[in-house]
Amino acid sequence: MRYEELADVPCSITRPLVVFGDRWTLLILTSSFSGIRRFNAFQSALGISRSRLQDRLDRLISYGILVKQKAAVGAHEEYRLTAKGHDIYPILLAIRDWGDAYMAPEGPPVRYRHHECTGEAHVRLECDSCGSELSAEDVTREPGPGLLDAVEAEVSAGSAR
Image (tube, rainbow, N blue to C red; front, side, top):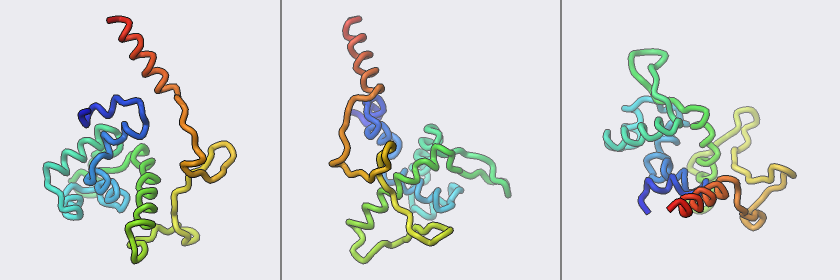
């Protein structure tokens, strides 16, 4: 299966890989949350080639995760996270939690603190009904409307042949 074809797979874990599927995209997003907004600043911070950086920024813009706009001060343009982009933050923190647990033997290299109480930010998986904390063992997968629609469309296409 070609990389671009992942967008057509009826799976909400697989489809985002078209957007997030490489390290540069995740590093650009991490930098965006750190306050980097200018092309040259991304390039300096990440050591990424201009063409690769432009490609990843264009992809994030096309998916509505970043928006390119004129800076409030100065004549340059900057890349800003959209609301859709801000919703990626828990994904990055989940990756960070895993990295701290399994790839940081000396301890976390960076702490993410709550401004008001200085506690640490962590991602928590919980039930939207009862609020219980969940793990993979507590969750059952079942077909949702998106999968059922995809199966129906495939059946319809097959019968039209």
